[in-house]
Amino acid sequence: MASVKLTKNELKNQKDKLKRFERYLPTLELKKQQLQTVMMKITADLEEKRKELSAKVDGLDGWVAVFSENKLFSADKKLENLVKPDNVVCTQENIAGVTVPVYKDLSFKEIVYDISDYPLWVDEAIYRMRDIAKLNMLIRTLEVQNDLLGKELRLTSQRVNLFEKVKIPEAKENIRKIGIYIGDQQTSAVVRGKIAKKKRQEASS
Image (tube, rainbow, N blue to C red; front, side, top):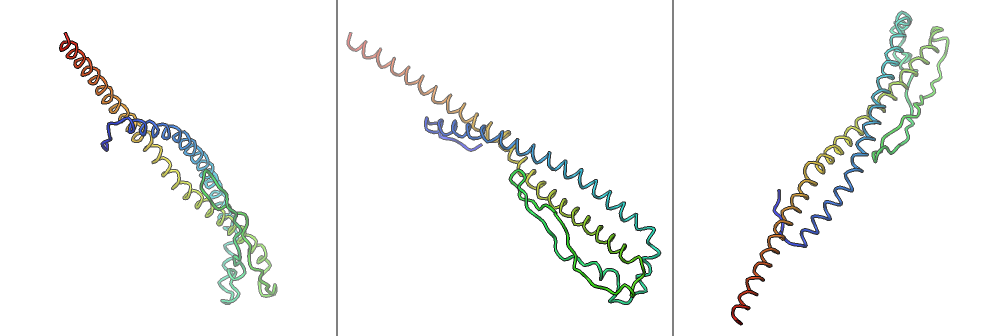
């Protein structure tokens, strides 16, 4: 603990600090609770979306045979060439003072192809691949939200601990020390005053 001046001015300074700390701490605690609540929801959403993605990918098992036909296509006609993400649409949202991206949509480049070059299942394949790509992008955005909010939660928790365990106790201890010192000084002054008065009275008698 840093040494403090044992003066009335410093006593006032320490009391003002304590008021600020005690006023700010509830705000930090509320922010911490908000972050924890939002992160719990995001974690639940992530678990749900990951299960949904897993189910969609598993749903492609029945397509393995037809997807294997992709190997037979020439390089410029591979299925992946028909599904090209174009633009991710995200907005921004402020959550407990943290700006996070919010996924809205993923658009794809419009690719014209000759249906005579592909089997009948190609349209359904493109639809499923786009659906999986959109879900992947949503999951990635939720992961970014989680990371950003997690960093802010750690920082806020550190500040709460700093105020609770260091700053507030330190200010209270400084106030106590200064108060004791000033009290002792006042007592000494009173005693010295009484002694001086007694000496004056003795000298005049």
